[in-house]
Length: 148
Image (cartoon, rainbow, N blue to C red; front, top):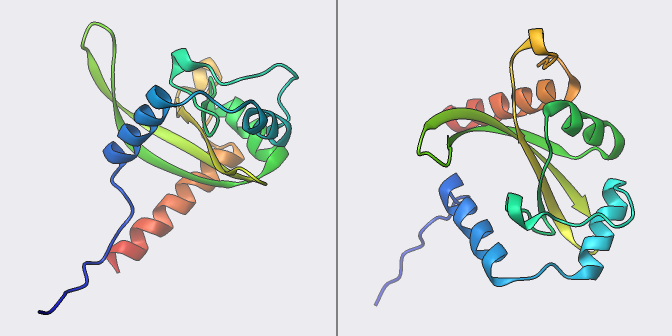
């Protein structure tokens, strides 16, 4: 009997999202983990993940790329972007560019902080800020490596 090796690859975005939703449904964030994440990210005492937003101790959201940029400049980390489909409560869908900051928190592991990139300088949303520039550069390098 022979066996063949099947190469593995990173999970597709939909699978990662499904795993995050499953984690949220099955677990309650451990208070010690939440405190380590809060401290590492420099959040205020008493902060905790917002289950309503789908947050877990290791998957968080912020309101804007400016808030994400403040976090990126404070703690660093790796950034990337991806295209995602969003749906409103009435079923309307649209495509958004999501930006993810991944911070390695000691004794916890990777923590992802995400938001959608808004591209409307008239309302103050700029895309020339460091976190967006770094994410787009990183994503472009990854795409170039896959194509090569």
